[in-house]
Image 1 (cartoon, rainbow, N blue to C red):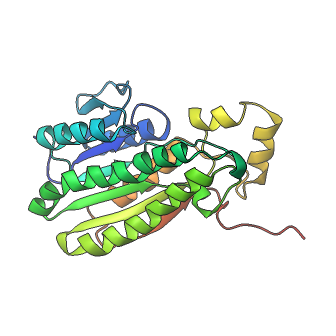
Image 2: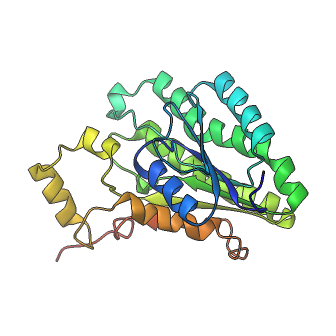
Amino acid sequence: MSAAPGKVAAVTGGSAGIGKAICEDLLAQGYEVVSLARRKAEIDHPKLHSIEVDLSDRAATGEAVQELVERFSPTTIVHNAGVIRAALLPEVKLDDLDALVDLHLGCAIQLVQGSLPAMRAQRFGRVVLLSSRAALGLATRTSYSATKAGMLGMARTWALELAADGITVNVVAPGPIRTDMFYDVVEAGSEKERALAASVPVKRLGESADVARAVRFFADADNSFVTGQVLYVCGGTSVGSLAL
């Protein structure tokens, strides 16, 4: 690859929403970027590459990771791909839990395991996992919250294991962000959307670019003294409030 060490990034779910914004932001910072998603990333940039893969399929993910490391040797991994599978507790399906474990946790493990040799060889690596404010708890999110919370423990463990190799591991946990996935749950322009925005302490919903800027901070080669941390990009919704 022609890119400098630390300037090759792999982004899961890079074809839409937050993932696409992350890809665009990293490209603007001079990274070579590889999107891994079910669809090709529709970004017109000479340093953008796409690997089409269903990341909920463990075998397919393994093949994609092999292609990724052989062709690009990324030293920055941003695991953004995710799905919700909303259900109240009586309707929770264990198959949904299994699927989210594979996507949110298993896929991250496969990506980082595959990329570790290149990171260790360069004594540099950046891993950023996209969790969610829902890791703190949210009705209808049993499987989603459990697996997104699992990312926090996993990141803290990896941060300890990999620090001596020059590899940092951090988490960005978005709150309500205006994406297609958000509008699958909340109708655009609805009273529910307006009420939700009003309930956020900063009085607005988040944008994908808000999250991309947080990812950029953790990915930056200069930020080598920050690892094992969680940054909530949530407009204050992770803090909580009490109306008196």
